[in-house]
Length: 235
Image (cartoon, rainbow, N blue to C red; front, side, top):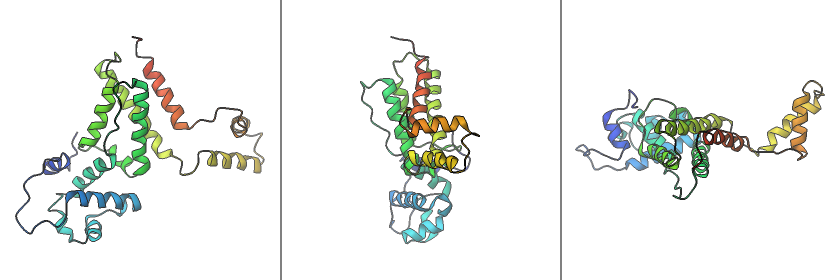
């Protein structure tokens, strides 16, 4: 669904259907250069650092000259999101639906790992670009032949997509074991073992290797897929 502030010309830009450039001096930049620099700036400093004035300064042009390429900052944001999402994953035709959806979910998660600023933007009403729509196409193709009804296939994709987006803010910046061990050591140092006996039991078992230590994202993804699999009748 298109966002209110996205102008029709911005939709054409997003989908690569560019209108004839206005008369005037020969363009010194390309749309790709502008979007790439905007993504680089957002990656390094966050979206709060991005303005048309700052972007123009980084590109060495006047602020108003950017509007010859992009009608508005809202249009620029849509272009940035689709560029950051990138090309959808290629999944072999013989890949089973479950393995395919695992690959799809991990590829989706990697977008947020590389470009954390996209997470707040993909949940807003806006125009979806070809890369993002391509992701949806790949996911629905993976569920083709499962016997799920069309609405169920879409809901399954939205469920997995929602799980990925819900997990993204909690991606560890360090090795997964480090924050767990810090928490466990803190409880021990504070003498809080008796107050939190169940936490102590679980974390001690994980620390000693006596329990299955799994990456939380992978564990949750498998459980989501288990639920979808329960809806698929054996062929």
